[in-house]
Image (cartoon, rainbow, N blue to C red; front, side, top):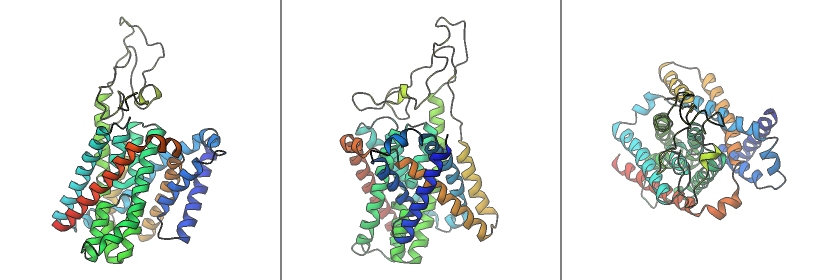
Length: 375
């Protein structure tokens, strides 16, 4: 029964809205993630989260997240992005690609298990926890693989809200340059708003357009990951006459299933994960392994929504309603993802992941500052 878990996620989103209304400086989506993490640490709540509420939280974390990302496309107008100029657009895209590649490489070098390098790279380079949720749905990441990247991107984005304004004047940035720096270097859209609004509406406007240019990269990055995964998971036609005979289980393990998602003893990724050092193990004869779509449906929806926003003069009431629904869906999804975080485990085993997160945070902040100087 998934309704109970969805209702709890909805109540959590409402509570996050209440806290945000009382303290507007704290982004609503950040509150939702933190609330999920806090609830997950309550011993009495853990059996419920893993039991009766699990089906509904899974619905909130995946389908609701994907629908929220589709609606996020309505925030993007290609006209607004084009107004930035080719230098700003080129440097923003470069920041995303270099941060993604650098963070992914750091995750591999530090030996993070499973999909964690890919998820951390996606979150830090594009749009925080929302991007992690989108990528995890494509690569079928397990909850424990998603929990650490969610916690890291929330932590580092929250630190950015406090640290970047302190560096604004010492670095000699103008108001518009500060907005550019924030939009290019802070992870989540809500965190960008919380950081840039300190410098005024002009800085906030620049920050949002630059940030949404980074969000635009979500579609191609997730699509490329889906294609890469598709190539690594071959479809094998049933062959009952083969020497091995039909598989005993009747189905091959899928990427992200318990049989292939557990980290190896040395901390390296196991076969079946994008970016792992070993190639995926072949499926058993007589089975068919389901391959992911070339372009996930929600990514196609995101692109369509963006094109609608660009080409169709939508009334403000429609955009405001879509923004409200999108915020509610993402708040519910991020609460559900946060509820999968076990801080005890993270503190015991997450030292390497924390190092990767902090290095990735420093990398994107430095790249963003360089881009501001070039613009």
